[in-house]
Image (tube, rainbow, N blue to C red; front, side, top):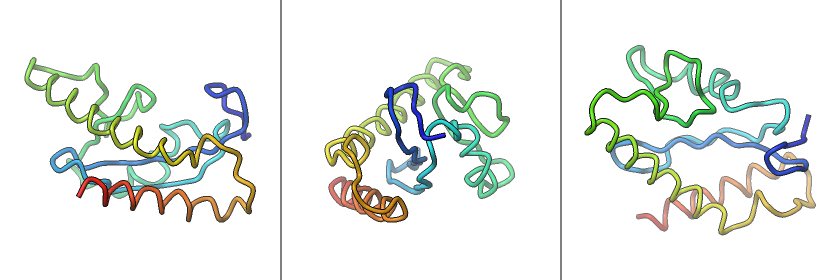
Length: 131
């Protein structure tokens, strides 16, 4: 259940959401075992239930198949596509900054229950760096 085909080894998965308007990190959820929890399953478990009735999220193709999700392929106009690309780039900046801490790429040698505390610390520091 922990095996990640993407990284060819055991790993944990987190869901991170940022505000499209401000770029602020607004949601962190995890850890989940990589093999047992694909992105869409994590979304449907928690974040989807917290959205307002007409609210949707913009996400990558790993979230396909849900009416509350707009993927990169769901654009109507060129300006809509550019706005989506801009939001995706901001989120990739967040992912890149979190990778600098190496909290997901190095072996964690403590209790798994403690991993979330270390990861959330890196999220807070990353948000503070943006501010």
